Image (cartoon, rainbow, N blue to C red):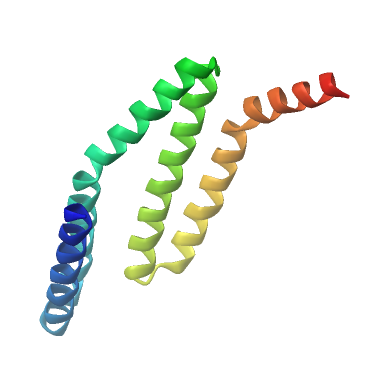
Amino acid sequence: MDSIIKIVGIALIALISIIIIKQYRPEFAIYISIVAGVVILYMIMDELQAVISLLRSISDKSGINTKFLSLLLKITGIAFLTEFAISICKDSGEGAVASKIEMGSKVIIVSMSIPIISSLLEVILKLI
């Protein structure tokens, strides 16, 4: 609960700073947004590490291939980083760049998920 309060506090401070800075130096507003985002990402690293270790523990106990777990974590990381980059682009008024990042990340995610999809299809074919 403390983490979310800190995150919201940083976000509100960044928002107020951006509103004030935009009046005098609008080009610096994006820097405040990036710094706030990086600070928030840094703050959630501990929780993210806990989730990753829990998933690894479950994977070890259930016998799930660790290659698939690694792929899923990479795909999730790509999705988070992409969303962060898209938000920054949209905040700076570059919607066209944001859409290109989004399209590129979707292609990368689909290409990375092919081993999981093919393994799933093999299991389905064995059941049929």
